[in-house]
Image (tube, rainbow, N blue to C red; front, side, top):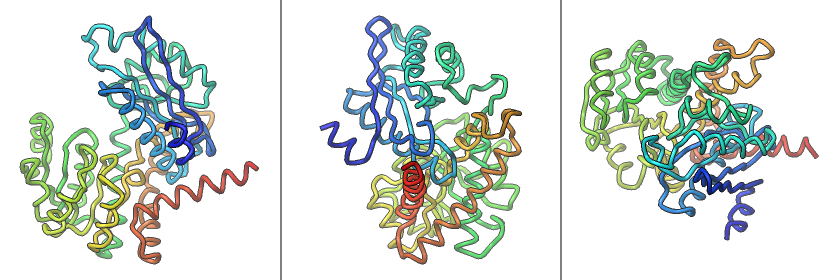
Length: 362
């Protein structure tokens, strides 16, 4: 069953990591190393069973192949998941010993997999992992670190939105655009600075009152309940919280509220591929999530030696992130010419680069 799935979607290697002494149960998925080392963060989550963990790590690692490819990075796609509760106060869960053991498993792969942060794993955790392997990136506060990825992700989303507004309205700025911002976390808070400065009007929501207070205090944005965000009259609906927010139930509401563009920072915004086709049929513009929200991984890429011997360069990293505007413009242009949904076009563009590299290696 597992081989059938990984062969069908061309996964290269799946590694199961088990250590009874520390309680480590982890899966590392390397979807592709054609463009370079399989790179992607490590997530720790209380999965209900091993099957759910495997499904998640396979989906996430394949997504990293596409994100890294379409962003022009010489990295393949990888991901790791650790099965367990990420809270350190839970006995025999996220312990230093468990994290160190995970680092040993990463090290055994000899650089074919490079790990970083994800849900449940922070910089302090990665420092423990790094004590056992050098194949770790994105540790805040470390010499040469790229730091918090949120500002870079927000910079990319902002430029992706600009490409969509240019395509849909012929406008060179966000001035006068009304944006329904679903989620006011760290990326959205950084994004607000650019949107407000460019003249956009923001209506936001969040389940965290602290996030709401921070955003309203600094930017004075309007707030609605999370359930009502789908009905806000707007030009742009921006999914920037949980995944699967674009689905058969929410899309009709978003469309009825007048949104022409869907562009945000969340991962896996479409619940299914069918929802991407539905967006296209409605004449709306969808900016594929892994293309528009790639600023964070691009930023980390410049920590990993892409900036040259001098180490991380914020200037070079953010110049690359700015290029997301060009990438989204190309996706939208091809979608229009080929009369094909944007998520399908983005997949083709990512696959084309991988196929070209694979052919060159022969």
